[in-house]
Image (spheres, rainbow, N blue to C red):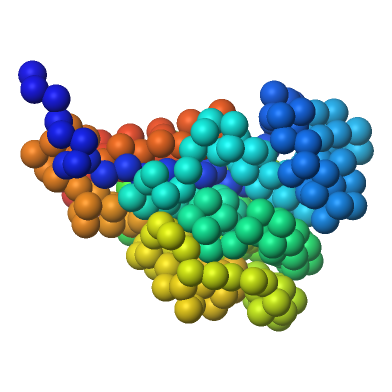
Length: 303
């Protein structure tokens, strides 16, 4: 078989978000980038290396610490792998990972991006709630079950793929949603280890403090498009601040973002539709989601 000309293929770089944290993450990275790590320590006021490698106070389960840690490890992995944002046609990140994508695409510097992530983590940590990962039901079926159960306070937080959704809402309502969705045939309905209903209206109290942080952030025009989670379209440089604030209470449109790239830049006559997705870092969470999204494209609808 003849090889596909490189100019006909599109490359996309992805950054994972919250949920990939684990003790020991980044263990081969911190010694390689001492200056960046020192800058991160100065901004955060603690050793990010100690947090990630030994987690002496058990803070990695706290979003105020896990979110900055993930941002730093993503940024170090990106550099360690010799990646360059301008070598790709498009970048994207899942929720928190969007800040790494913006940094890699030149919209913001490493330090300013970390300041924003820290502000975001602190603002959202003050909002209570719970989240539920649901696998095996299409989104419209999930919504129908929630309506039938009268669970109006439960919202879509992440649309990860056709059959994988994350919901957010009050703790008690999430418990009722889990029971209803299991009865409706969900293959998996698992509470996530978080204490907030991220990307739902229940994060409204975080808007004001985070708006102040984004207003002060030194954004600039990037060199590579970044697909926004909130819109599943490339960021407009003049609207990045607004979109990041609005995204606090809007779902992660991951499936739609990947499909936009495939529909807009792909070529159905090429293997994998002519788009090469690469995930920065050691996890392959997003790579698996892309595989699911590709697999489900064109499959018949389910009632």
